[in-house]
Image (cartoon, rainbow, N blue to C red; front, side):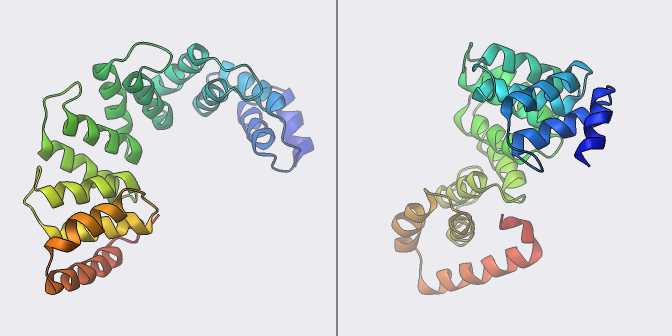
Amino acid sequence: ALKWRQKAADQGFVEAQYNLGFMYAEGEGVEQDFKEALMWRQKAADQGYAGAQYNLGLMYAKGLGVERDFKEALKWWQKAAEQGNAEAQSNLGVYYYTGQGGEQDFKEALKWYQKAADQGHAKAQSSIGVMYANGEGVELDFKEAVKWYRKAADQGFVNAQNNLGVMYGFGKGTEQDYVTAYAWASIAITNGNKDAPRFKSEFLEPKMTVDQIAKAEKLIKEMIKQNPKLLN
């Protein structure tokens, strides 16, 4: 398979170039070689292949097979994002949100998060929730934060699950509901969130009756049965 892929890539077939880049980056069927991966991704990216442009940006951002260069990463993510690549759009959101290697710009961050979120990108949806919860680049709006946290939480995105539990626990953007808060915190714990155990044991449990905790445990089972994607 490698021989034919190599032949096709040499002849300029963009999918073959992209696949070779993946194989060398992951060490799949070949010895891992980031320089070789970079070369093939560059070839595919130059032909306008969005997935290769995104991955090339990633290699520049992480300094894999090349010197770390955020400006170059941004350039390739921008190209991929403009073609509708959700991962690149989300990464641009992170780039502008944190101001990493450039100026912090919440409005620009929200624009790219929104594009990725509209394609169902869970991390971007959660990030929009954070921006509404903190009033960053938007009016503070807890209801809107809950809406976006829920979209991401339903897809199994653990930070959003924890944040949703906190919103229910404090009654922000939704009615205060310890049972639902407990359920989301428990699911977040199962998925490995580091903040949820303390929130559950120190904030929720002391405020809850035995009956409420039993209700919450039952709710957890129902939620997972209805949506197995809650557990990532």
